[in-house]
Amino acid sequence: MAFVKRNTVLSSPRAGFTPSTPQQQQPKQEKQLAPGLRPSPTDGRLTTSTGTASLDQLLAGHGGLPLGTCLLVEEQGTTDFSGILLRYYAAEGLVQGHQVHAVAIPPEWRHQLPGLASPDKKSKSTSPAPAPEEKMKIAWRYESLGNNANAGASTRGDSGAPFCHSFDLSKRLASSESKGTLNSIPVGCAPSLDRRSVGTASPLKTILKQLKAKLESSGPTAIHRLVIPSLLSPTLYPPGCAQPSEVLQFLHGLRALLRQYSTQLTAIITFPTSLFPRSSGLVRWVEILCDGVVELIPLPARLGAAPPPPSGSDSKANEQPQGMFKAYTLPVYHEKGGGGAESGNFRENLSFSLSASRGLVIKPYSLPPMLEDEQEKPSAAPKKDGLDF
Image (tube, rainbow, N blue to C red; front, side, top):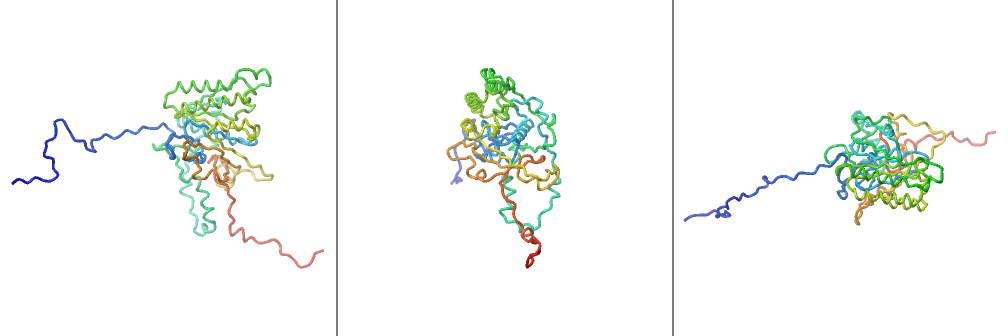
């Protein structure tokens, strides 16, 4: 009597048939991303850094500026904080090997870009840990304010390469650090007060033609960044560009290029609201045609204030807010949200401060906590009974 083991196949395998095992399956080759890109944690779209880490964390939770979108940065007054954002944006693109297209900016602007900051090893090792008694003096809600900007922030991409570099305003970007190219796009004719120049062809259309030619001539993996400073400013653009028909056609054409090259092109535009207030209809249409709209409102200077400390000092004066930051529109891609409303950070009162070593830092605005030492200050001279003559 023959015994057959259970769960065994009695039939012989067919000729030429080899059962596949998990070890024999070839692993899928992951597609390598271009330098300076990483997928968005919200919807997986490719994003690139603006060069300012705190601004990346505010862009609708994407951790950067999504490709195929443009950001409008409005600024009040005569300061140039928005211009510093453009310098960081262009410097980050050159370091990552992207093609940067600067409108109405001479080629010498390259020498004004900030250089890479040297790694500071002493800050982590020599910084003393605060005593537990010092921590108890400040409420926990005030203690966590300084960590909101860096919570969940990652300055590295999936491949391990830096996603957002640290720059120093006191340095200049060296040619050895720049891997990309800077293309200067002239506006055409220089600003003139002659009324006959208003009827000529708009130079804004030539900007779109040159940009489209650069995009078509480059490969499909090349990343492009468009820098447009002080749109409609009479110091950079002819007076004919301020016509609503001209600027709105230009923004419609730019929006079409952004959607056509949705994996290659990003843009940041600065806009002076002191010349064109937000209450005007033209500015409202400009904001509608942009994917993201933020505004920088510098605080007025105080009379008799102390001069700013040097860049290398560790004084707390570098952290004092220099203006307010408002976010009006953020990129939203689907009906379920994803525009930053889940976290609610952009709904808070935000402020910004500028330092040479840390750049432009955006964080929630809050009054400094009052400690016990400040509450127990000795009062003024004691009051005397009676009157002194």
